[in-house]
Image (cartoon, rainbow, N blue to C red; front, side, top):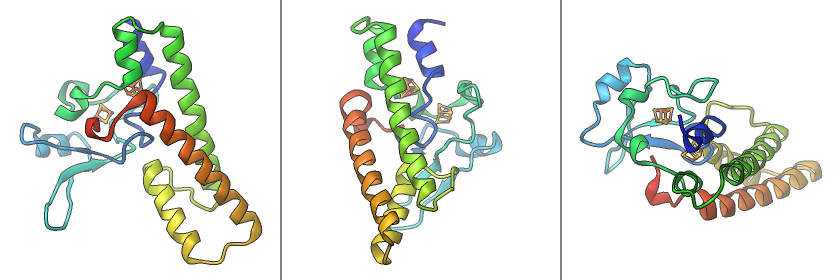
Amino acid sequence: MNSAEKLCLACGLCCDGTLFDNVRLGPRDDAPALKALGLPVEVTRGRTPVTLFRQPCAALCADRTCRVYADRPGQCRAFECGVFKDAQAGRIAFATALRSVKNARRKADTIRRLLRQLGDTDEHRSLGDRFRRTQRRLESGDPDAAAGAAFAKLGLAVHQFNLLAHEKFHTRAEAP
Ligand code: SF4
Ligand code: SF4
């Protein structure tokens, strides 16, 4: 295992619902086989149905390995974040890449802490889903001062994370 691969084991952000809400399956992916492996594959309703499974990924293990690595979908195979690419190509040192990953994880943890403070404890949903749901709930209600202050902090934390993700990790077009 090389240093860039070790980086992923210290990270997991592209599988745990932090960077992405879901993994979309393509025509070459075997949806029934992935379902049989325990991934909650579904087809979305609407004009253009999409076959996907939601993150945090059910195949992500506690040690951040992928339980279905040999059979993972094409988009998981294709995705490499900017930090990984830079480390793999030797453009940045492994220690620098690790610092970026740890910084991103810290920022994501701040978002999770604020979401919990605001009453969203659903760790089985992606960070993006949880933020949007909390935003809808608070904006349609009449939050007290403490909730209003926590929501302001949450908005700032999400904004800062999105800037970092955009700069160092991904563009939406690369989503697995
Ligand atoms: S976000 Fe990058 S460093 Fe983190 S697990 Fe995914 S590819 Fe690896
Ligand atoms: S299938 Fe594996 S690589 Fe793909 S999101 Fe899940 S844990 Fe990550």
